[in-house]
Amino acid sequence: MKSSSSLFTYLLILLLIAFLTNVQNLNAQETNWPQFRGPKSSGHADKNCNPPVEFGTDNNLLWKVELPEGHSSPCIWGNNIFLTGFIKDKSELQTICVDRNSGNIKWRQSVLPDSIQKYHSISNAAVATPTTDGERVYVYFGSYGLLCYNFKGNLVWEKQMQITNIKYGASSSPIIAGDKIIISFDFHENGYIQALDKVTGEEVWKVVLPNVYKNHYNTTSYSTPIVMKDQVVIHRVEEISGYSIRNGSRLWWLPTPTSGISTPVFSQNTLYIGTWQPFGERTSVGDLPDFDTMVTKNDKNGNKLITKDEIPDKMLVFGRPGMDDQSMYVKKSFGFFDKNKDKAIDKGEWEKTCEWIVSFYGESGLMALQPSGTGEIPISQILWKILGKVPEVPSPVFCKNCVYMIKNGGDITCVDAVNGKVFYCERLGASGAYIASPVVASGNIYIPSGNGVVTVIKAGNKLEILAQNDLDEKIYASPAIIENVIYVRTAGNLYAFEE
Image (tube, rainbow, N blue to C red; front, side, top):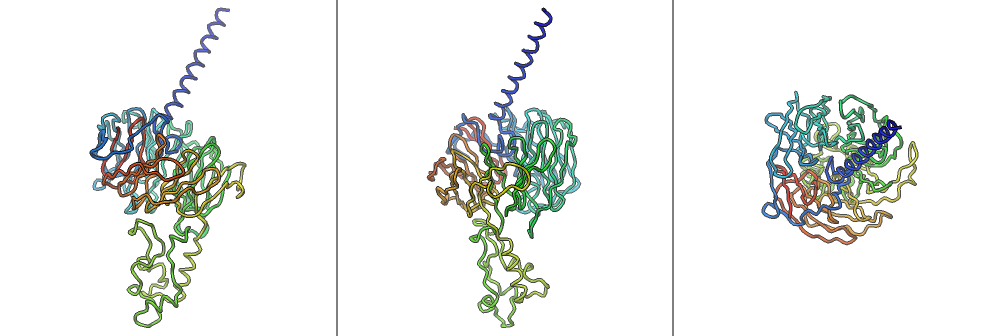
């Protein structure tokens, strides 16, 4: 009897330890920033966080530390901030651990790949954000593969992967789902999603992604997957889809016009996805004239052909507001029109190219989706969809029953999360590119522009700008917020601001 009593007591203690550990892990997820866009990739800080509204290089600055170039966002657990960096002249890829209290570098680890993945001028070789489970940190470089370090900076395991050259670099970040690390390699026609054992790095499952491209010039997705209950949700080119965490099986999918760039967010059972594509909005597509009008206005030598020097400099094919250098102009895209490469565009070439451009038009927009069941899900599961002003890169953010999105040029849109009613769509007054995603703390939304201005607005159905903080450096990485501190990575530094 005494033995049974002792066994019961022992089991009770084990259950209590398990319960307390589980509670501790749940709390840790809330008070840390363990992956791209924080807990659940939501962009939300813990409800008790209260970072400053006004800050700058000489205002509420706790510390700053110089970093090599990189677009990865801060990943934070306890007193550790993990980031990646790229030293171009050495072809060196770094994983960096920064002390959260002091800003001092705790350790750096480097890899030197045989070659560096090609990337666009607006990008670099250190784009994907690390993720952590509180014991190990997982880092992905498109030029090398996946690496796992412990918190002391010791390499636990690595998985080198084939380099795939894609236009904007490998920006999809790894995520943790239970005992697995999951990462999407949605590149061209041979894309796949893979799950690895987070302790050993051994493959658990690998699933080839179906080719769903429909006459699309882009076949690469850049979105980071999210975990929604027992599924991995991926925003792909031409599709939103859900996969089983357990075995990687494709559960459901929704065909839709999109380039698969921004990361979805969810609240309870509803997904919010910004489905952007280059020709998805008429307001972004240049008003190209018919060929006869083009000749009448621009054919200087009267040969009924259009040469490159006869094309107006600012005639748009596709525009990115606030990013003229990244817009698509007819003159710069002359090769698309000049099919036979004779250095002149005839009527057939002009009409064929214009037809090709129009073929990409689709009703891109912000949608609310409640996926259920299996297979191709019906359009009826789309609760609402609003067209126009959808961002190219920044993810939407959900706050106080509204969804917010920020577009290149500084257009901010606030939408009722229940019915899709647009409460407002206005200019922030901070122009330029918008690459980083907004984050939320204490009922305020922090919106970084590529030009280095962090605008803070109050969440609500009317635009209320609280502050605009100019750091005078490019910002392409999404901020992180822990307790009363906001961490902002710029082109050359990591800043910590606290009131």
